[in-house]
Figure 1 (tube, rainbow, N blue to C red):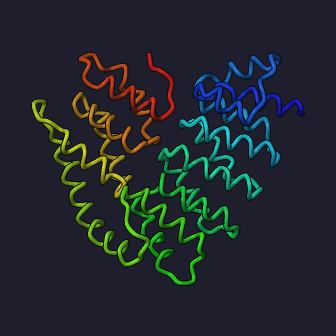
Figure 2: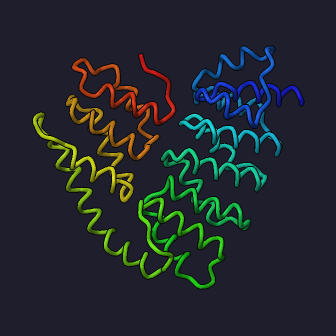
Figure 3: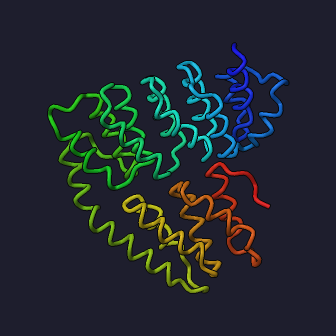
Length: 296
């Protein structure tokens, strides 16, 4: 193993504390690179990971494949940042493995999802199939028309069609027979009414009183939030800036349910301000799901 590959091996070991899982793909870290391991932190800090990738460019195919697999196993927002880098790799195998890892981590980050969508135009079948499946985990309603076109068009590649059915099922949280007309009917019954229900519940939560039970409203938002991820993110970001602890609590719950990595910094910012103990536990759970370390 070359010197820089040894550095890469050591750097990956502390990612999100998943030592055992990563060890299946990577050899033990040599003690000579202890400073690099410490600089990355545990969980890995995004800035440190980006610095490491800059220093190790260009990644050869073997290193890229191993890194993609390890990041997929580790999970978390910093691992997602590393995968975004690998999605631009020259090798189709590295890109395909990175797409699978994005689906495995299943955190929604708009910049990563945009790159995944570009994979829908890939010439390689495996890369394209991986991109379609990944959208089932990180996509939203904007992806449904394309997925429906894949299952409805006779000329669609069989692998594309199978991946599209899988993505639709995962995205919508439903199980429907692989019959295009059934899926089209499902989307017709959900797209407009579902968006209306989502907006109604977001508005109701926005005016929530301290003595009101938000459980039913929150359930609707977490179930239908994928219909308008940008709109939900805008609402939650606003709630997290307000001085109403009950709204901050609800925002943290929805961040956790929809796995919204784009709101990680917002949650970290409000977590230490919970003097009344209203939303601290919800914030910690959101940060845990996003792969963050404990806050102080």
